Image 1 (cartoon, rainbow, N blue to C red):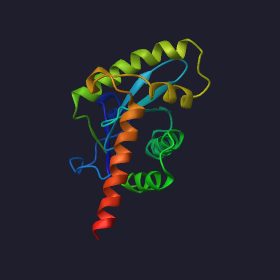
Image 2: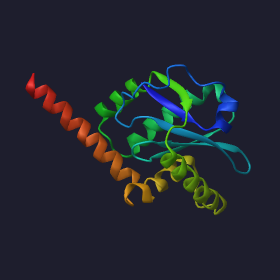
Image 3: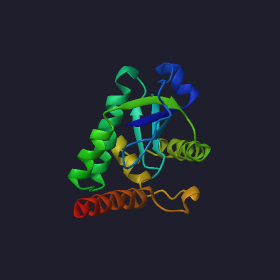
Image 4: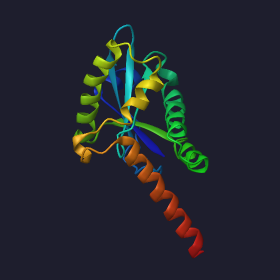
Amino acid sequence: MITLRCTQKLLKRLGPPSNNETQPPTSVLGDWYANLIYTRPQQLVLCMNERSLLMVLLTARHSKTLTARFRQSVLALLYRLKIPLSLIEAEASAMQDMRIGRTASRRVVGCMVEAAKVLGFKLRSDDFQTFEDVEDEFCEYPYASVGYRYPREIALDLFSLASSSGERSLRIN
């Protein structure tokens, strides 16, 4: 179970948050944050992971399919990061139960604001062909709030810890 923690701007479009938003996440990456950003020629939803600061981008139209498209984009990003397939499948399973909630961390919201500013410049530069290109670029963007580490590096560490703790629990039994 995860919560997609949306800004007020995005909640106005998606509708009210779920009632059970305070449950802790069961996925390795934890909750994700989402914000509606205005770019030309289209509106985008910038989603950022609470623990690793990985980022995925989605078009804002078709808000009814946002959670399904979000899940698909996250799993594609994990595949591009070369996370082991068994761990991606476990993350996909944990993401099946997704709630919509309000933002809860100013640190993550601040990182999203920073990413949105940089994104505006990058999208105008025409250096990128696809959202995946942008997402891959932001995997190597250092954020001050995590000691200038890269989101890719943090995500790999999180999955490595999850993998080794799973192995330890198997060995004990």
